[in-house]
Length: 298
Image (cartoon, rainbow, N blue to C red; front, side, top):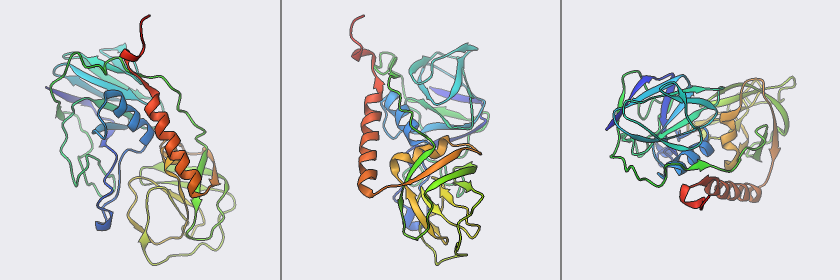
């Protein structure tokens, strides 16, 4: 069984990323919006599976046979021209055409249960800078899928909880370098490599460069311009600019939902707050999906 790509837009394959090779200079990469990634994997009940991250549509595929799929994000989904559900699991019939039109610049995630993708360095993720991992999708690409269980209990599952948060509030742990970045900033540009910020009052005394040291997604670098850059999943593993803080794990997914000219508020917190926020988010994701067998009798 297989699915074939009819329109790719700008679509790449992602999973949780590859964190075991940063010592070799390989970026972490992974899904830009980790909350939506975890939700789409939870829906089809395949943890850490390869999914299609649609950064710009329209996207379209056709199924050779039946396929169990789920789409999570802000988009219009249709099958053979008829509206199809989003944030839920449904079956794509033989020769059905699935079309996804993104509603904004936020990534949309499509999971095809049993999708077969070759790993690179222990991950399915494509890194947009180093080009490690599967290539971006192109028209005519075909992907094999494992055999479908037509009685799979995940069919009909849906996201029943609202996990929306205040996207403009980004919490960070200050340091290691001493820059006061708390407060309001404007988003200048958004990419998987990083989010550039702007303001009428750039930070003063921004150092031109430092000896290279390790950096990570979420690190808030301060280049000579005094305008911070929040590193994204495709950032390098080392950097030579001061780091004023690191966005906490529980807020990293918000970076994918920002758009140019958005106003954000950087809020310093301590490590205990960061840990509790991660635990709360994980519990929320686990409770967000409802299965058909959990709904009881009507």
